[in-house]
Length: 559
Image (cartoon, rainbow, N blue to C red; front, top):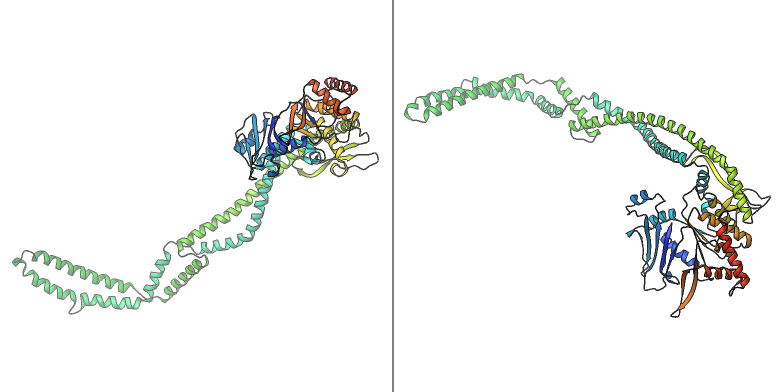
């Protein structure tokens, strides 16, 4: 609930502060004194648009600040979600700078207007005449009936399961779409995978085959040249090793004449042996190298196969082809897993759907039980408000599908006059009828729904006498469960106040400004008397005012 509202430098308000009763606060005053201007200022902390033309002093910023007790509104998660400091006594402030820039704060933390709107929607229901869209909102209508049907526990269970159900349905739809696309691709991927699998890829194979191909292509030259080399080194009449052995003999004959020659002769001998061994190896390689046309064709075909696969998959080696093969295997397995996941999800959704229909039918049954009494009570209150032929009917129809709030389509239908058709409230009720309907509906569910602070701006417009008196009785009853603020021209409603504020204008330094002050008991009598008969009020009006105030202390609930 709102504790205080302070306004600085807004329209014709220089500075005021209002302390609200936690029950029924009534605001009355002179015509044009600025009662509705205060609501405009309140609208600023509710996130409404701001303009610099509302500044009382164009050189000074406007500040509107509300102090709220939010202990009963279950808003801790909201504060945590938006990284705000949660305080039971929360301060909401809006500033309009002379530059035109605006700022909003929650407990001194800057916030965006969207967050401000979301928060204050839970705290303030600003109900102006012709501004009664909430009772036309299907979600509000369902909330009303569920509150009366005591469906809170069932709805909580249903909502939890419904969120899981819709989440799984979205997941299933996504998987099904992916699976459909996958099925168009999986055959192609399977073909590519099997082609690579059949290729029996081996790491390093291309390099080996390329070397073998070169060998086969040059086999005759290899055989001829290596054979000649071995012959000239070892077997020729004047072979190299023979000549070197003659030299070795001569060097060996000199070893006793020089200290280094024995070692050099030994090295020379080792070189001859290595050369002989090299010649033998050359001869062996030459002898084993044979030209094989069939094998050359096999190698060429295999290399072409590997080159083609590399080009097809845009890679440069068989190692990368093996990676492609593994990726294809994983992708194909993924499609298989997807089918299993789809099957699991479908089973889970079927079970969730059955559970939701079961809970939904319980909710629907409880709703049906309270409709008759609800309709009768609405009609009884409407009769008190001089709408004796008006009838509200709740149309409850079973849905063919699960809905976020259950298994029913629920709609309030209204018939304002005898013989008229029942139609949607928004399309058939006048502004005054909507105001009275909203008041009666909210009064009936006041104890069952955590309504925000209800602020009514002249909903009594166009009514007087007994109707206004009954409207005051309903407002008073509503205020026993919730904080209610009403701006009114009706003395009958004003008499019901727990706290009565008077708005008035005064001239200060050639400027007209709005001020507001709480009225004491005798001041209330005088103000209500003025509302009854004019200024100055007659003695009869004063006596009548006293009687209204006395009656208000006795009558607190609708008859």
